Image 1 (cartoon, rainbow, N blue to C red):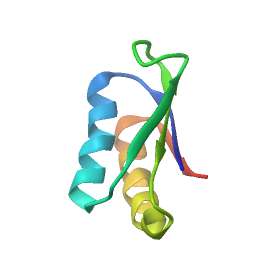
Image 2 (cartoon, rainbow, N blue to C red):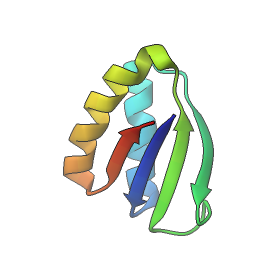
Image 3 (cartoon, helix red, strand yellow):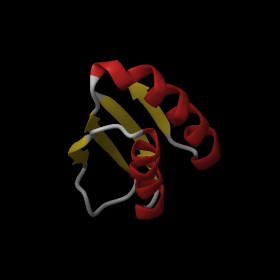
Image 4 (cartoon, helix red, strand yellow):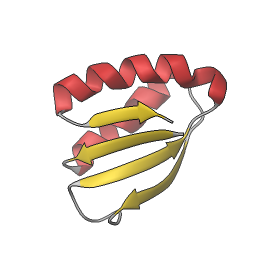
Length: 73
């Protein structure tokens, strides 16, 4: 599972989805807190265990660019 905190906009969330697509990772958006329509939000995604290292590396770069905090749990 991937937790992405401090997501500030729909565009930032879309960047996360785009990164998954570029990596060829099958993912599923599990939930967002406080909800999917509010920002700042924390989004949770299921990512396969065998993709965790690649996802973690890309999310760290995106975190630096977009100001959110991503962590593979």
